[in-house]
Every structure is written in structure tokens, then in C-alpha cells.
Length: 481
Image (cartoon, rainbow, N blue to C red; front, side):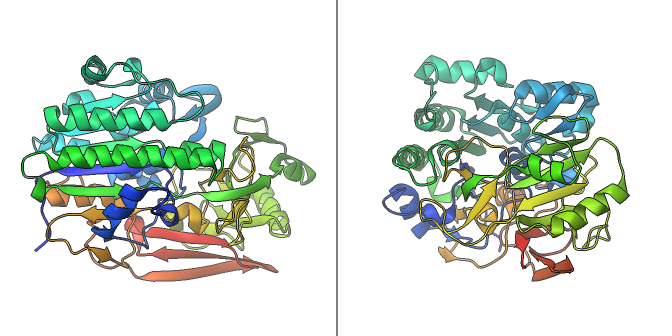
């Protein structure tokens, strides 16, 4: 019999690498995992970027279906002169107004809960856009959503009022997000769980992601931030244990993606200029617009397949070039020799770039001695700052663990992904989704793993995928030679 639960509590530790959950860094979470069903082969969604991940968690669908293809992307209909920023709730509202219902039309977990007479609650200490993407129709759904970005950034401002009347305003956090994590934990433990009693409660903690980026992957400041999130988790576990039917409640601890330690900034604009391409980094350009990171998305202003083919050939000869993915192939290989098709990683959407270029990373340790490193493009992070969005295993690996009476603790080697979270929650509660989801419950049929290879000349790349179609999960990829 599939497991069932009285309610579900989810804590998302933004950006947490599973291998960094140790007794000295996060003792409470480490102890929780010992009594939970753990999925060491869990995978993020591609690209492994926060708002892309949030959308996949909220919809059970990959970017090819849900349409949030990057943290920022060109959308001149909604935002002219710069990229549409999914972190900004103003940009998300602007896009929804410009495109109508089609911008965020894919049903969310919260929509299915509302249709079944169940209630969704969210306390979000990250970006307001991230909270919006988890439940764009929060008011209509009767959800209780609080974005710590502010009352005006919250779709249900009465929820903000209720929390701040009890706890006061959220603390300013100019030099770190640990205090916000502590406040978010209090909001969930002292207001949402005991007073709202939602069927599904999500606590989204922006640490350790922020500190990984801006303070370094294993600095003293980052460890402090990890302990702050761990303490918030402890607080909500204690509050959940005091509620009725606590013995039947499901608790999921997870992260949305991992991080790879960066080794230094790479000047992609200069490299592309040498190839006759004028690249604008993280903004619209007259020639090519680039969304930067460890893997960069290239949107040419003019569609010219012949020019892209020449660019791909030139990139394949550069030793720094890692993964190459392109739109419009046969479902496995891209339209240019040696590339993979975006459809293979479920990122083939009209908003997607026609060409993606990864930096060549590897298993070598980062500046903190943690395994896995990569150059980075366009981000002002310190040496050893973390990044995600690419196909490095350290970016794609995420934490997923379920604690529920009747579910045996221990490791489960199944290939699971973020698209499985919403189907799992609905199945635990016996709720039928209002529309089919690409993902499946965590205990669903096994996905067969395969490793694919393609290349041209001396350039070779591989991609590890489990399953088929829109419900497949991407494990890792990169240059092989």
C-alpha cells in the first residue's frame, strides 16, 4: 500500500549540498536524516537555478512545460531593456499582465490542494519572485503565503499582517540571511503550524544558498548561516510534534539544487569577441544576449543557424568549453554535430536560448578543499563562492529525505527529482492533481539510467539521464575530452 499522511511539512534549504550535511555544520538535520528515507541519487532540474527549481517543485513539471527556463531571460513584451528577473515579484506580475494566464498557466500543487478543499501555506525567506512562482494564485486558492521580502511582495498581505503582528517585522539582513532564516522558522513554528493548521506547509530558507554565493562555500560566516537554518528546522520540527496526529504527519527535508565551488571569473565576452560575436552579459544585447554562470545561455538577436553552427565548431576547439546544448535537434543530439538537444534535458521551450555553453569544470577541489570546481562567467562572487545552473554533479545533486511512520528509514537508490515532489505530496494526502504531472511519487516506478555521449573531432561530452520523456531526471553532464 502506498504511504499516506495526515499533513505534510516541507523545509527547503536553498542550495544545500547533500555532502555538506555533517554533525558539525547542521546537527539537527543530520540527526533527522538518520531516521528518514534518503535519496542519495536525487537530482535537481535543469537548469539548476532557484526559481526554475521552485517552479518545478510547485508544478511537478520541467521547464519545457512550465516555461520558467532561467532565473532571468529576455522578454521584451514584459520588460524592455533588461532581462525579466524571476526574483522580482514586480517582474512576475508584469509578465503575467503582459502575457495573460499563459505566463503561469501550468497548475501548481496549491491549485490541486485548493480544488480538493485543502490548504497550502508558505513562509519564504528568499526572493519575492520565488514565493510568487510557488503559488501565483495564492489569493484565489485561499493559501496562507508570507514572503519576507515585504507586505507588498506578498500575494496574501493579510498573512503578512498576522505574522508581523505576532513577531514584529522581519530583521534587516544586509550582510547575511541567517537572521531571516531564524525569523522564518519562528513564523512557521509560532503562527502557521499552530494557528493556520495547513494541510501542506512549506518553509523556504534562503540559507545556505546566499552565503555559499557571497561568503564562500565553507567559510566561518557560511557555517554560521548553516547553523541558523538548522536551528530554524529544529524549531519547526518541535512545533510539528506538538500538533494533533503528529505521528501521521510526513516531514520532507530537501534542497532545490547543489553548488559547485568556483575557481575564478572567466571572460566569456572577450572569448566570444575573438570569434566575431559581440556578447552582452546578463542583459539584452545588439548581437547576442547572455545569461551567465557556470553554464551560459546565448540568445542571438538574429536567427542564423549557419552562424551558430560555425560558433559551435569554434567553441568545441576551445579547451575551456564544457557542455554544449542546442535547440531543435532529434530529441537526443542537437542540430549541430557534437551538441545535445535541449529536449533531452527537458528545457526546450520557446523562451529558451538556441545555444547553451558550459564552463569546463571537474572533480578537482574548490578553494575550500570541497570536491568539484568550475570557472564562472559574469558573477561577482569571491574566490570559492558557490554557483549553480550547470550540469556539474555538485550543482545537480540535491537533498531529498522523507520521514513518515511506516516508511522505512535508510538509503533508497532510486533516481528521483524535483518534479517528483508535488506528486509525492498529493499522493500522501490522497489528492488527485487537477492536471497530469510529469513527475511521480518518490516510490513510483524505477527510472532506468543511461549515459549518452556525443562529439565532433576531439571534442566529446557526456550526459547522464534517468527515465524517458518529460518525467526524466538529469543527473550530470560535461566534457569528456
